[in-house]
Length: 361
Image (cartoon, rainbow, N blue to C red):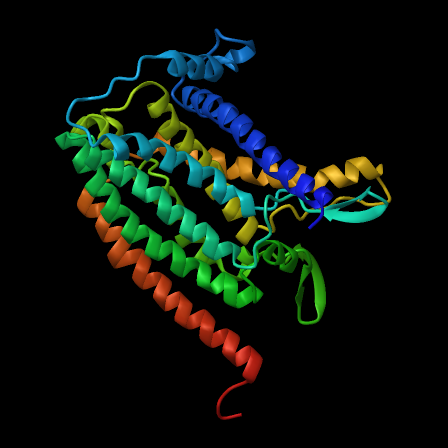
């Protein structure tokens, strides 16, 4: 790897970081505005046009706010927990492609530049690993705070993560079996064609959701639970355990938890789009539109699809009441995990028959 390759890698990492920071700022404003519209309120309208700078104002406030440290905390883990929440949130998005690769000429050579932080051959395993690491932040924050309510939030997070991480992992196995790869860029490429029926091309994109609809449903429910969003936000239930695992956090430390939640929401929406709805694939009209516009359109399709899922996240928060804890566990262990196992057995058998034929034939 020469210095140009290193420079391209650094540029992609910086681009992903800047993208996530910008998206997080806009997403907080978007949620406030959508919920306000659904509840017949105005929402933020003071800072900036349509209140769009309200999130920036809140971030500046939290940055300069005094950070109070309780006396009985386990100081090392207490300080590490917010960073352990934010860092995996950034790293998880690194393997998600958000646009069509393009070619540039540097140093007299043509180089392919993917719009993706890193194209790992085990991208899906990497995503599951990062989402699992993020759970430790919630657990450690609750335990190290030296208070009963944060501890209850951390214990709830442990049980919830075990339940829904298992369901999410099982929902992704059919995607790997169907596409034949764990590399996320190849999963997107496998959905770039159109469906055929009885030898006829019907023109509809060959998105995985058409065949793997149960996997998509299980993944979506698990993703909402993994991000601790309503109606699965029992780890920070204000009516029951004050603020949950981050009760004893303030200032910038609290802001890191807040940042991680919204980045995780964006990342899970991006993963749903990438794994089941073709990712950035969409009509680019190459040769019809100017080359720059055609190159940009795949990224536009990606963010339009992601915006739909983000709206669903906000819609759920605005409309559904919080589940009881026994309902949360029942849904995970008695509904999602058995359903994902049955579906995995079925899709595995169907793919085996398609490839090898029936045993008696």
